[in-house]
Length: 150
Image: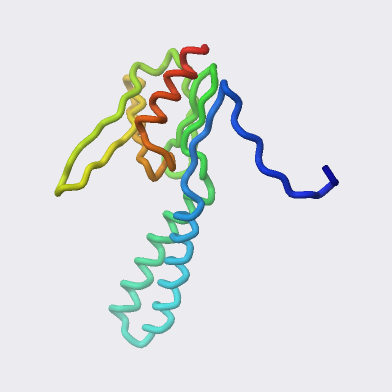
C-alpha cells in the first residue's frame, strides 16, 4: 500500500472485540447541538426562549462530546474487559472481577428495552443498544465466548 493511503481499520481478532457508539447517531447529536445554538441566536430577543435554547444546546452538546471523547464503550480480550466509567473515563476489569454478565429486558409503555449488565459485585455497568451499536444479547454471547478463552 502506498504511504498515506487510506485503509479500512483492522477487524478485531477472534480473541478480542470492541463495541462503540454509532457514528451516525453521534453526528446527529452534533447537528442537533448546532441547530440549537442557531435557534438560541435567533431567539436572542426573548430571554426565556433564549435560556431554554441555551440549556438544550448545552445538554445536547454534552452528550455529543461524550460520544466524541469516548466512542468505544466496551472492549474485551482474554484478560478482561474495559468499560466506560463516569462521563468519559474507563475502567479495566479482569475476568475474575466479573461475577455475572446478563441481559436485562423490560417492557414499558409498549416499548421493549434491553441493557447489558456487567456485574462486579460492587459495581453494575449498564450498556444499552445505543452504547454498543449492537444487540445486547449478541454482545453478551461474544463476551462469554471471549471469557472462555481466558
